[in-house]
Image (cartoon, rainbow, N blue to C red; front, side, top):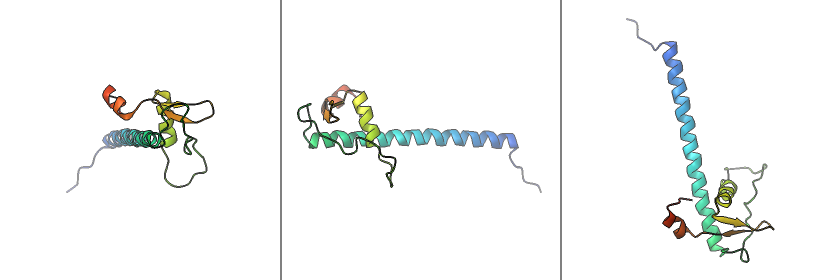
Length: 112
C-alpha cells in the first residue's frame, strides 16, 4: 500500500499560510509588549510625580542603546508612542511628564 502524500502545491500553500500566521502572531505579541511597557512608563511617571513641565523627570530608558545585552527593552518605543499620542509630554531639555492620567485615558476609552 502506498500512502497518499500532499502534492507539492498544497505543501507550498500550507507553508505560506503558516508563515503568514506566524508573522501576524509576532505582530500581536509585539503590540502587547509595547502596551505593557506603556503602562510601566505611565506608572513610573506617576510614581515620580512628573505631572507638569516643572516637575518633569529624566527617564534613563528614554534612549535605546545598540550595545545593550539581554532581553529587548520596549520602554523607549512605548515612550515614543506615548509622546506622539499626547499622553506624555517632553520638555526642551529631554525630561518627560505625564499629560493625562490613567483614569482619564480609561474614561476616554484609550488603552495605552
